[in-house]
Image (cartoon, rainbow, N blue to C red; front, side, top):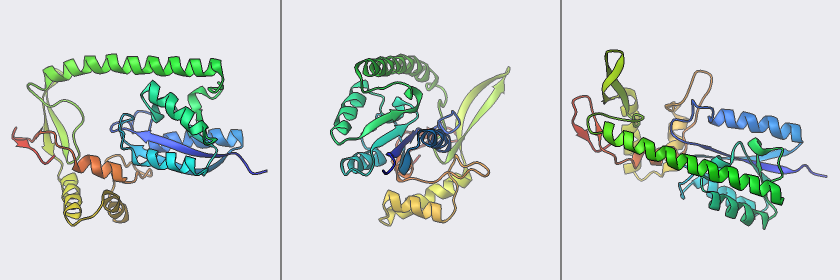
Amino acid sequence: MSKYKVAYYIRISVGEQSKGYSLEGQKSTLDDWIEDMGWKWVKTYCDEASAKDTNREKFQEMITDAKHELFDGICMVDSDRFSRSTKDLLNTMDDLLNYGVKLHIHNLQHIDIYNEQGRLLLTNLATYSEFFRGQLASKIRVGVKQKMKTEWFGQAPYGYTILSDDIGGRKKNTRLIKDMGEQKVLTKMRKLRENGKSYSEIATALNTDGIPTRYTRENKKSSWYSTTVRNILNRREVVLDATGNSDKNA
C-alpha cells in the first residue's frame, strides 16, 4: 500500500524570516513531523505574502492540485499560515474535504480537527487569533500614524536602509537612506520588467545570477519568488531618502 501523500504549505511575510517563521524553519518542522508519521512528501507550496492576500499564487496552485488528487493532505505549522480569517479557513477546509484532502496543523497535531470537539477547538483558537491581531493592529495603527508625522516608521522597503540618530539613548529622526547594492538589483528588476519579463521570469533571472535576497544568510540561501518581485516592484508608498525628499519609485 502506498504511503499517505502530503504537500506542505508555507507562508512567510516580510520581516518574519528572523521570527521563527522562516522558509527553512517551517520546512524543517514539517519534515520531522511527517517522518514520525510515516507520510510521504510530494510537493511544497511557498508564498511570501499576507494570509489576507487573495492573489497568493502558490496557494491557488495548491488548491488546483488538490482537486486533481496530487496528494491526500496538506501540512502547515500553524493555521494562520493557511488563512487569518476563521471563516475562510473553515470554508476551504470543507471544500478540500470534498476532494478527499485533509488539513494537518502541526501546532494541533494531537487533535482531530474533523470531529466536533476538534473543529470547535480549531474555530475558537482561530477566532481568538483573529481578534487578537485586530486589536493589536488597531493599537499599532495609532502609534504609526503619530510617528509618521515626523519620521519613518516600519521596515525599510527594498532598496533602502534605516538610519536613526541616538539621542539620550533613544532612536530619533528615523529616516531612509538608499542601499546602493539593493538599488542596483532594483534597477535590474525594473529593466527586466520594462523589457516584458514576467515576475516569475525576473525571479528566475535573479536566482540564476546568484543575487542574494535580503534574507539570505551565510550557508542558508533564500530564493527569489515571483510574489517577492511583484511586491517590490508594485510598491507605491512614498518614502523618504536621506535628504528628506520624496521618492515615489520605492
